[in-house]
Image (cartoon, rainbow, N blue to C red; front, top):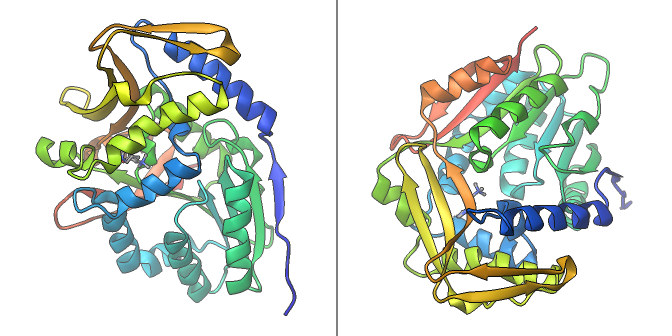
Length: 330
Ligand code: AVJ
């Protein structure tokens, strides 16, 4: 057996990633309402905690999306006629394999292109796939999905069409303005007739939503507080992780879940690498994530506004998650 080494293009170096972390933390911790971007949850420990979240009884998006994908993946593959699968976030290998297998059955599959911020995560995902799909061209892209969509490889020629998958409901982490900009960049990255496959969590009962972000066993609380460990390690900060409570609230007006970390006492923390002292009042919140939930009409309107035409949407029986296939318009 021969071992293939996949091509990996690096558009985001460790130095770039560090500069972005510094800028984001400086901005977020000096703001009047303190906030941090959710992408910093996902170091090795945070990624493992997120994997645990996806198995919690209270957290349904991941398994609901997987079930929708399993049921409809051949139809999706047929509608796209795609030979290249691009995936934003190297994703759960289970969902990737479902899509690759279906595109393979549809007869045009030639290439898999995951985009991820982590070279190590890409390498691991691609190595696993190389063994299973010996004929598949593997081309990883190290980048950030909000800024590097213009670095995706072109179509492979000879009538190749690309399917860009953005799964898991991660679109909900973007604020409405960022979302519009993101979808417009997706449209620009695609040729007319190429497709976006988007997974989005839907608005449902507030109790159900809050429980999904405040589970009984406290895994989500640990995941939330993990961002403080990341700052302590990466920026030599001294945040007292145990002095922050996990909070999840449903914002009914904006239809998103907010995760926050609430200071349990007044404190001052030093972020040594930024030369920064951050003060927290007792009860003060640090917002760590928004996770927007969607309505089908709103989602279709946002896609349409970006130049993407919704072709089909699949929804689970409890109406908690939607998979939408949208084509780039001329
Ligand atoms: C991976 C962004 C889709 O927003 O539901 C899970 C992350 N946060 N529990 C989500 C998350 C808290 C998740 N996404």
